[in-house]
Length: 446
Image 1 (cartoon, rainbow, N blue to C red):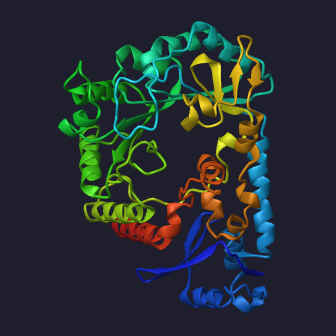
Image 2 (tube, rainbow, N blue to C red):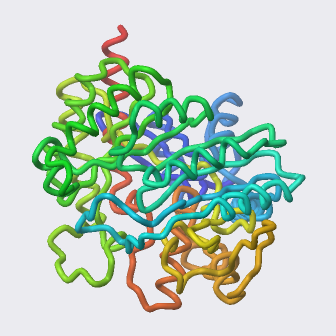
Image 3 (spheres, rainbow, N blue to C red):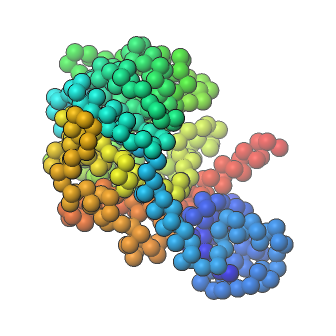
Protein backbone atom coordinates (compact mmCIF):
# COMPACT_ATOMS: atom_id res chain seq x y z
CA UNK A 1 0.00 0.00 0.00
CA UNK A 2 1.12 3.57 -0.66
CA UNK A 3 -0.25 7.09 -0.64
CA UNK A 4 -1.74 7.79 -4.06
CA UNK A 5 0.05 10.31 -6.24
CA UNK A 6 -3.39 11.90 -6.76
CA UNK A 7 -3.64 12.69 -3.02
CA UNK A 8 -3.03 16.20 -1.65
CA UNK A 9 -2.47 17.22 1.97
CA UNK A 10 -4.38 20.33 3.06
CA UNK A 11 -4.16 22.05 6.46
CA UNK A 12 -6.60 24.94 6.78
CA UNK A 13 -8.62 26.47 9.61
CA UNK A 14 -7.33 23.94 12.12
CA UNK A 15 -8.43 21.02 9.95
CA UNK A 16 -6.16 18.30 8.59
CA UNK A 17 -7.63 17.24 5.26
CA UNK A 18 -6.91 14.93 2.37
CA UNK A 19 -8.05 15.61 -1.18
CA UNK A 20 -7.82 13.14 -4.06
CA UNK A 21 -8.22 14.18 -7.69
CA UNK A 22 -9.25 10.70 -8.87
CA UNK A 23 -12.14 10.23 -6.43
CA UNK A 24 -12.66 14.01 -6.07
CA UNK A 25 -13.03 13.37 -2.33
CA UNK A 26 -12.15 15.79 0.44
CA UNK A 27 -12.08 14.47 4.00
CA UNK A 28 -11.00 15.73 7.41
CA UNK A 29 -8.93 13.24 9.42
CA UNK A 30 -7.16 12.97 12.74
CA UNK A 31 -3.95 14.98 12.95
CA UNK A 32 -1.92 11.90 13.95
CA UNK A 33 -3.14 9.92 10.92
CA UNK A 34 -2.55 12.96 8.70
CA UNK A 35 1.09 13.21 9.78
CA UNK A 36 1.62 9.46 9.48
CA UNK A 37 0.31 9.43 5.90
CA UNK A 38 2.38 12.47 5.08
CA UNK A 39 5.50 10.59 6.19
CA UNK A 40 4.61 7.83 3.73
CA UNK A 41 3.83 10.22 0.85
CA UNK A 42 7.30 10.00 -0.73
CA UNK A 43 6.25 6.99 -2.81
CA UNK A 44 6.95 4.72 0.15
CA UNK A 45 5.25 1.33 0.50
CA UNK A 46 3.78 0.46 3.90
CA UNK A 47 1.54 -2.09 5.57
CA UNK A 48 -1.98 -1.34 6.78
CA UNK A 49 -0.93 -2.18 10.32
CA UNK A 50 1.59 0.68 10.26
CA UNK A 51 -1.26 3.19 10.21
CA UNK A 52 -2.61 1.81 13.51
CA UNK A 53 -6.17 2.60 12.42
CA UNK A 54 -9.49 0.78 12.50
CA UNK A 55 -10.64 -1.31 9.54
CA UNK A 56 -13.39 1.28 8.99
CA UNK A 57 -10.88 4.12 8.60
CA UNK A 58 -8.62 2.04 6.37
CA UNK A 59 -11.61 1.25 4.16
CA UNK A 60 -12.49 4.96 4.02
CA UNK A 61 -8.97 5.77 2.79
CA UNK A 62 -9.18 3.06 0.14
CA UNK A 63 -12.66 4.04 -1.03
CA UNK A 64 -11.55 7.64 -1.45
CA UNK A 65 -8.43 6.41 -3.29
CA UNK A 66 -6.21 8.30 -0.86
CA UNK A 67 -4.16 5.15 -0.64
CA UNK A 68 -3.54 2.65 -3.43
CA UNK A 69 -1.62 -0.47 -4.21
CA UNK A 70 -0.10 0.93 -7.37
CA UNK A 71 -0.30 4.34 -9.07
CA UNK A 72 0.00 2.72 -12.48
CA UNK A 73 -3.12 0.65 -11.85
CA UNK A 74 -4.99 3.86 -11.05
CA UNK A 75 -3.72 5.43 -14.28
CA UNK A 76 -4.81 2.37 -16.24
CA UNK A 77 -8.26 2.64 -14.67
CA UNK A 78 -8.39 6.25 -15.87
CA UNK A 79 -7.30 5.07 -19.30
CA UNK A 80 -10.10 2.52 -19.32
CA UNK A 81 -12.66 5.21 -18.47
CA UNK A 82 -11.33 7.49 -21.24
CA UNK A 83 -11.49 4.60 -23.70
CA UNK A 84 -15.11 3.87 -22.80
CA UNK A 85 -16.27 7.40 -23.59
CA UNK A 86 -14.21 7.64 -26.75
CA UNK A 87 -15.67 4.42 -28.14
CA UNK A 88 -19.22 4.65 -26.79
CA UNK A 89 -21.41 4.24 -29.88
CA UNK A 90 -24.67 4.30 -27.92
CA UNK A 91 -24.57 8.08 -27.41
CA UNK A 92 -24.77 10.82 -30.04
CA UNK A 93 -24.01 14.51 -29.51
CA UNK A 94 -24.90 17.06 -32.18
CA UNK A 95 -24.16 20.77 -31.99
CA UNK A 96 -26.34 22.34 -34.67
CA UNK A 97 -25.79 25.90 -35.90
CA UNK A 98 -28.77 26.74 -38.13
CA UNK A 99 -27.04 30.03 -38.92
CA UNK A 100 -23.74 31.79 -38.24
CA UNK A 101 -25.50 35.15 -38.47
CA UNK A 102 -25.89 37.24 -35.31
CA UNK A 103 -27.84 40.32 -34.33
CA UNK A 104 -24.92 41.57 -32.22
CA UNK A 105 -21.26 42.21 -33.00
CA UNK A 106 -19.43 41.77 -29.70
CA UNK A 107 -15.83 42.96 -29.92
CA UNK A 108 -14.40 39.77 -28.41
CA UNK A 109 -16.29 37.22 -30.50
CA UNK A 110 -14.15 34.55 -32.16
CA UNK A 111 -16.73 33.89 -34.88
CA UNK A 112 -17.25 35.39 -38.32
CA UNK A 113 -20.97 36.10 -38.69
CA UNK A 114 -21.69 34.90 -42.21
CA UNK A 115 -25.30 35.47 -43.24
CA UNK A 116 -25.85 31.84 -44.11
CA UNK A 117 -28.87 29.85 -43.00
CA UNK A 118 -29.73 26.17 -43.10
CA UNK A 119 -32.28 25.08 -45.66
CA UNK A 120 -35.21 22.73 -45.09
CA UNK A 121 -33.29 20.10 -47.04
CA UNK A 122 -30.34 20.40 -44.64
CA UNK A 123 -32.64 20.09 -41.62
CA UNK A 124 -34.09 16.92 -43.12
CA UNK A 125 -30.57 15.59 -43.79
CA UNK A 126 -29.79 15.90 -40.07
CA UNK A 127 -32.95 13.99 -39.22
CA UNK A 128 -32.03 11.33 -41.78
CA UNK A 129 -28.57 11.02 -40.21
CA UNK A 130 -30.00 10.53 -36.73
CA UNK A 131 -32.52 7.97 -37.95
CA UNK A 132 -29.76 5.98 -39.64
CA UNK A 133 -28.15 5.32 -36.24
CA UNK A 134 -30.44 2.59 -34.97
CA UNK A 135 -28.32 1.65 -31.95
CA UNK A 136 -28.29 5.11 -30.36
CA UNK A 137 -29.77 5.14 -26.85
CA UNK A 138 -29.18 8.81 -25.94
CA UNK A 139 -29.14 11.92 -28.14
CA UNK A 140 -27.85 15.31 -26.98
CA UNK A 141 -28.72 18.27 -29.20
CA UNK A 142 -27.25 21.73 -28.62
CA UNK A 143 -28.41 24.65 -30.78
CA UNK A 144 -25.57 27.04 -31.45
CA UNK A 145 -24.58 29.93 -33.72
CA UNK A 146 -24.09 32.78 -34.52
CA UNK A 147 -27.36 33.44 -32.83
CA UNK A 148 -29.45 30.29 -33.33
CA UNK A 149 -32.76 32.03 -32.63
CA UNK A 150 -32.29 34.11 -35.76
CA UNK A 151 -33.16 30.83 -37.47
CA UNK A 152 -35.83 29.77 -35.00
CA UNK A 153 -38.06 28.70 -37.91
CA UNK A 154 -35.52 25.96 -38.72
CA UNK A 155 -35.35 24.86 -35.08
CA UNK A 156 -39.14 24.57 -35.01
CA UNK A 157 -39.09 22.74 -38.32
CA UNK A 158 -36.63 20.22 -36.93
CA UNK A 159 -38.88 19.31 -34.00
CA UNK A 160 -42.02 19.24 -36.16
CA UNK A 161 -40.40 16.67 -38.47
CA UNK A 162 -38.30 14.71 -35.97
CA UNK A 163 -40.01 11.66 -34.51
CA UNK A 164 -37.45 10.07 -32.27
CA UNK A 165 -37.08 6.35 -31.74
CA UNK A 166 -34.44 7.22 -29.12
CA UNK A 167 -35.66 7.03 -25.53
CA UNK A 168 -33.40 9.71 -24.12
CA UNK A 169 -33.35 12.96 -26.13
CA UNK A 170 -31.97 16.10 -24.48
CA UNK A 171 -32.07 19.55 -26.07
CA UNK A 172 -30.31 22.74 -25.05
CA UNK A 173 -29.43 26.08 -26.61
CA UNK A 174 -26.71 28.71 -26.34
CA UNK A 175 -28.21 32.10 -27.12
CA UNK A 176 -27.90 35.79 -26.33
CA UNK A 177 -31.60 35.70 -25.43
CA UNK A 178 -32.69 38.69 -27.49
CA UNK A 179 -35.11 36.71 -29.66
CA UNK A 180 -36.29 34.52 -26.79
CA UNK A 181 -39.88 35.73 -27.05
CA UNK A 182 -42.92 34.16 -25.40
CA UNK A 183 -43.63 31.83 -28.31
CA UNK A 184 -39.97 30.73 -28.40
CA UNK A 185 -40.03 29.88 -24.69
CA UNK A 186 -43.23 27.93 -25.28
CA UNK A 187 -41.40 26.03 -28.05
CA UNK A 188 -38.65 25.18 -25.54
CA UNK A 189 -41.27 23.78 -23.17
CA UNK A 190 -43.07 21.79 -25.86
CA UNK A 191 -39.84 20.11 -26.95
CA UNK A 192 -38.45 19.40 -23.48
CA UNK A 193 -35.40 21.66 -23.56
CA UNK A 194 -33.52 21.09 -20.33
CA UNK A 195 -30.81 23.77 -20.47
CA UNK A 196 -30.41 27.31 -21.77
CA UNK A 197 -27.22 29.33 -21.63
CA UNK A 198 -27.48 33.09 -22.02
CA UNK A 199 -24.41 35.31 -22.17
CA UNK A 200 -24.51 38.83 -20.75
CA UNK A 201 -21.83 41.53 -20.51
CA UNK A 202 -23.09 43.69 -17.69
CA UNK A 203 -26.37 45.38 -16.86
CA UNK A 204 -28.16 48.37 -18.31
CA UNK A 205 -25.88 50.66 -20.31
CA UNK A 206 -22.87 48.38 -19.72
CA UNK A 207 -24.75 45.61 -21.50
CA UNK A 208 -26.01 47.88 -24.28
CA UNK A 209 -22.49 49.11 -25.06
CA UNK A 210 -21.34 45.56 -25.88
CA UNK A 211 -24.56 44.02 -27.17
CA UNK A 212 -25.22 46.90 -29.49
CA UNK A 213 -28.17 47.05 -31.90
CA UNK A 214 -29.09 49.88 -34.28
CA UNK A 215 -32.75 48.93 -34.09
CA UNK A 216 -32.96 48.69 -30.28
CA UNK A 217 -31.15 51.17 -28.09
CA UNK A 218 -32.02 49.27 -24.91
CA UNK A 219 -31.38 45.59 -25.57
CA UNK A 220 -30.95 44.97 -21.83
CA UNK A 221 -34.62 45.59 -21.09
CA UNK A 222 -35.58 43.16 -23.86
CA UNK A 223 -33.32 40.46 -22.39
CA UNK A 224 -34.71 40.91 -18.88
CA UNK A 225 -38.30 40.79 -20.13
CA UNK A 226 -37.56 37.53 -21.93
CA UNK A 227 -35.87 36.09 -18.85
CA UNK A 228 -38.85 37.04 -16.71
CA UNK A 229 -41.14 34.86 -18.80
CA UNK A 230 -38.64 32.00 -19.05
CA UNK A 231 -37.90 31.85 -15.33
CA UNK A 232 -41.48 32.31 -14.13
CA UNK A 233 -43.14 29.80 -16.46
CA UNK A 234 -40.58 26.98 -16.81
CA UNK A 235 -38.20 24.83 -14.77
CA UNK A 236 -35.57 24.79 -17.51
CA UNK A 237 -32.06 24.99 -16.12
CA UNK A 238 -30.88 28.48 -17.04
CA UNK A 239 -27.23 29.42 -16.92
CA UNK A 240 -26.47 33.15 -17.04
CA UNK A 241 -22.91 33.35 -18.35
CA UNK A 242 -21.38 36.63 -17.16
CA UNK A 243 -18.59 37.59 -19.54
CA UNK A 244 -15.79 39.33 -17.64
CA UNK A 245 -12.93 41.34 -19.05
CA UNK A 246 -10.93 41.69 -15.82
CA UNK A 247 -10.60 39.99 -12.45
CA UNK A 248 -12.55 42.61 -10.49
CA UNK A 249 -15.27 40.65 -8.67
CA UNK A 250 -17.58 43.63 -8.16
CA UNK A 251 -19.18 43.43 -11.60
CA UNK A 252 -20.01 39.77 -11.21
CA UNK A 253 -21.27 40.18 -7.63
CA UNK A 254 -23.58 43.04 -8.67
CA UNK A 255 -25.03 40.95 -11.49
CA UNK A 256 -25.39 37.95 -9.18
CA UNK A 257 -27.27 40.10 -6.65
CA UNK A 258 -29.54 41.49 -9.35
CA UNK A 259 -30.68 38.05 -10.49
CA UNK A 260 -30.90 36.57 -6.99
CA UNK A 261 -33.12 39.47 -5.91
CA UNK A 262 -35.23 39.42 -9.06
CA UNK A 263 -35.82 35.65 -8.92
CA UNK A 264 -35.51 34.80 -5.20
CA UNK A 265 -35.15 31.14 -4.37
CA UNK A 266 -35.16 30.04 -8.02
CA UNK A 267 -33.80 26.49 -8.05
CA UNK A 268 -32.95 26.30 -11.74
CA UNK A 269 -31.04 29.56 -12.19
CA UNK A 270 -27.24 29.62 -12.23
CA UNK A 271 -25.21 32.80 -12.56
CA UNK A 272 -21.64 31.89 -13.42
CA UNK A 273 -18.59 34.01 -14.26
CA UNK A 274 -16.85 33.47 -17.58
CA UNK A 275 -13.54 34.96 -18.61
CA UNK A 276 -12.40 36.39 -21.91
CA UNK A 277 -9.05 34.79 -22.60
CA UNK A 278 -6.68 34.32 -25.51
CA UNK A 279 -8.38 30.99 -26.17
CA UNK A 280 -11.61 32.76 -27.10
CA UNK A 281 -10.26 35.83 -28.89
CA UNK A 282 -9.88 35.89 -32.65
CA UNK A 283 -6.28 36.31 -33.71
CA UNK A 284 -6.84 39.58 -35.52
CA UNK A 285 -7.40 41.34 -32.22
CA UNK A 286 -4.23 43.16 -31.22
CA UNK A 287 -5.05 44.35 -27.72
CA UNK A 288 -4.36 42.29 -24.60
CA UNK A 289 -6.31 44.57 -22.26
CA UNK A 290 -9.05 42.02 -21.64
CA UNK A 291 -6.97 38.84 -21.62
CA UNK A 292 -6.86 37.02 -18.28
CA UNK A 293 -4.28 34.62 -16.91
CA UNK A 294 -5.03 31.60 -14.77
CA UNK A 295 -3.64 33.38 -11.72
CA UNK A 296 -6.23 36.13 -12.31
CA UNK A 297 -8.98 33.50 -12.28
CA UNK A 298 -7.78 32.06 -8.97
CA UNK A 299 -7.61 35.52 -7.39
CA UNK A 300 -11.06 36.40 -8.70
CA UNK A 301 -12.69 33.22 -7.38
CA UNK A 302 -11.03 33.68 -3.99
CA UNK A 303 -12.29 37.27 -3.67
CA UNK A 304 -15.82 36.29 -4.73
CA UNK A 305 -15.90 33.41 -2.26
CA UNK A 306 -14.71 35.70 0.53
CA UNK A 307 -17.51 38.18 -0.14
CA UNK A 308 -20.16 35.49 -0.38
CA UNK A 309 -19.02 33.92 2.88
CA UNK A 310 -19.00 37.24 4.71
CA UNK A 311 -22.52 38.05 3.50
CA UNK A 312 -23.92 34.53 3.83
CA UNK A 313 -24.79 34.43 0.12
CA UNK A 314 -24.92 31.60 -2.38
CA UNK A 315 -23.41 31.82 -5.84
CA UNK A 316 -20.38 31.16 -7.99
CA UNK A 317 -17.05 31.31 -6.21
CA UNK A 318 -17.07 28.19 -4.07
CA UNK A 319 -15.72 26.27 -7.01
CA UNK A 320 -14.82 22.67 -6.45
CA UNK A 321 -12.95 20.51 -8.94
CA UNK A 322 -15.11 18.38 -11.17
CA UNK A 323 -13.94 14.96 -12.26
CA UNK A 324 -16.86 13.55 -14.19
CA UNK A 325 -14.17 11.18 -15.48
CA UNK A 326 -15.24 11.68 -19.07
CA UNK A 327 -13.42 13.32 -21.91
CA UNK A 328 -14.50 16.07 -24.29
CA UNK A 329 -16.95 14.49 -26.70
CA UNK A 330 -14.97 15.70 -29.71
CA UNK A 331 -12.95 12.48 -29.27
CA UNK A 332 -16.06 10.44 -30.07
CA UNK A 333 -16.96 9.81 -33.73
CA UNK A 334 -20.68 10.09 -32.88
CA UNK A 335 -20.24 13.72 -31.84
CA UNK A 336 -20.00 16.57 -34.32
CA UNK A 337 -20.99 20.11 -35.13
CA UNK A 338 -23.21 20.81 -38.13
CA UNK A 339 -23.35 24.20 -39.79
CA UNK A 340 -25.16 25.76 -42.75
CA UNK A 341 -24.56 23.82 -45.95
CA UNK A 342 -24.50 20.59 -43.95
CA UNK A 343 -20.81 21.19 -43.25
CA UNK A 344 -19.37 19.04 -40.46
CA UNK A 345 -16.94 20.09 -37.74
CA UNK A 346 -15.22 18.23 -34.92
CA UNK A 347 -15.48 21.10 -32.44
CA UNK A 348 -18.12 23.80 -32.07
CA UNK A 349 -15.39 26.44 -31.94
CA UNK A 350 -14.69 25.56 -35.58
CA UNK A 351 -18.28 25.83 -36.80
CA UNK A 352 -18.44 28.41 -39.58
CA UNK A 353 -14.69 28.22 -40.31
CA UNK A 354 -14.82 26.24 -43.52
CA UNK A 355 -11.08 25.59 -43.42
CA UNK A 356 -11.78 23.47 -40.32
CA UNK A 357 -14.60 21.49 -41.91
CA UNK A 358 -13.89 17.73 -42.07
CA UNK A 359 -16.88 16.68 -44.15
CA UNK A 360 -20.43 17.26 -45.32
CA UNK A 361 -23.81 15.67 -44.72
CA UNK A 362 -25.54 14.77 -47.98
CA UNK A 363 -29.31 15.04 -48.41
CA UNK A 364 -29.80 11.41 -47.39
CA UNK A 365 -27.95 11.94 -44.13
CA UNK A 366 -24.72 10.22 -45.12
CA UNK A 367 -21.42 11.59 -43.82
CA UNK A 368 -18.98 12.35 -46.63
CA UNK A 369 -15.50 12.87 -45.13
CA UNK A 370 -13.51 15.43 -47.14
CA UNK A 371 -10.55 15.85 -44.77
CA UNK A 372 -9.48 12.58 -43.12
CA UNK A 373 -6.33 14.20 -41.74
CA UNK A 374 -8.30 16.81 -39.79
CA UNK A 375 -10.81 14.24 -38.56
CA UNK A 376 -8.04 11.96 -37.29
CA UNK A 377 -6.32 14.81 -35.48
CA UNK A 378 -9.41 15.45 -33.39
CA UNK A 379 -10.31 11.82 -32.81
CA UNK A 380 -6.82 10.52 -32.05
CA UNK A 381 -4.22 13.32 -32.10
CA UNK A 382 -2.48 14.91 -29.13
CA UNK A 383 -3.77 12.25 -26.77
CA UNK A 384 -3.12 13.23 -23.12
CA UNK A 385 -2.94 9.55 -22.24
CA UNK A 386 0.16 9.29 -24.44
CA UNK A 387 1.63 12.56 -23.13
CA UNK A 388 4.35 11.77 -20.59
CA UNK A 389 3.77 15.05 -18.75
CA UNK A 390 0.04 14.34 -18.41
CA UNK A 391 0.67 10.73 -17.42
CA UNK A 392 2.70 11.86 -14.42
CA UNK A 393 0.48 14.80 -13.48
CA UNK A 394 -1.44 14.73 -10.18
CA UNK A 395 -4.19 16.84 -11.75
CA UNK A 396 -4.97 14.55 -14.70
CA UNK A 397 -8.32 13.24 -13.31
CA UNK A 398 -9.73 16.79 -12.95
CA UNK A 399 -8.05 18.14 -16.09
CA UNK A 400 -8.36 15.28 -18.56
CA UNK A 401 -5.52 16.78 -20.53
CA UNK A 402 -7.33 20.01 -21.28
CA UNK A 403 -9.36 20.98 -24.33
CA UNK A 404 -8.50 18.76 -27.34
CA UNK A 405 -9.08 21.72 -29.67
CA UNK A 406 -6.43 23.75 -27.85
CA UNK A 407 -4.04 20.81 -27.68
CA UNK A 408 -4.31 20.37 -31.43
CA UNK A 409 -3.81 24.08 -32.04
CA UNK A 410 -0.70 24.05 -29.87
CA UNK A 411 0.84 21.08 -31.68
CA UNK A 412 -0.14 21.68 -35.29
CA UNK A 413 -0.44 25.47 -35.42
CA UNK A 414 2.23 26.55 -32.97
CA UNK A 415 -0.25 28.20 -30.61
CA UNK A 416 0.82 28.73 -27.00
CA UNK A 417 -2.43 28.14 -25.13
CA UNK A 418 -2.21 27.10 -21.49
CA UNK A 419 -4.18 23.85 -21.55
CA UNK A 420 -3.78 22.95 -17.87
CA UNK A 421 -6.62 23.29 -15.40
CA UNK A 422 -6.66 26.53 -13.40
CA UNK A 423 -6.93 24.39 -10.25
CA UNK A 424 -3.25 23.68 -10.82
CA UNK A 425 -2.58 27.35 -10.02
CA UNK A 426 -4.46 27.40 -6.75
CA UNK A 427 -5.97 24.11 -5.61
CA UNK A 428 -5.32 24.85 -1.95
CA UNK A 429 -7.09 28.23 -2.28
CA UNK A 430 -10.24 26.59 -3.65
CA UNK A 431 -10.21 23.81 -1.07
CA UNK A 432 -9.66 26.33 1.71
CA UNK A 433 -12.84 28.16 0.75
CA UNK A 434 -14.72 24.86 0.55
CA UNK A 435 -13.53 23.93 4.06
CA UNK A 436 -14.46 27.37 5.34
CA UNK A 437 -17.93 27.09 3.81
CA UNK A 438 -18.42 23.64 5.35
CA UNK A 439 -17.40 24.89 8.78
CA UNK A 440 -19.73 27.88 8.55
CA UNK A 441 -22.71 25.75 7.54
CA UNK A 442 -21.95 23.24 10.29
CA UNK A 443 -21.84 26.04 12.84
CA UNK A 444 -25.15 27.44 11.60
CA UNK A 445 -26.83 24.04 11.87
CA UNK A 446 -25.90 23.64 15.54
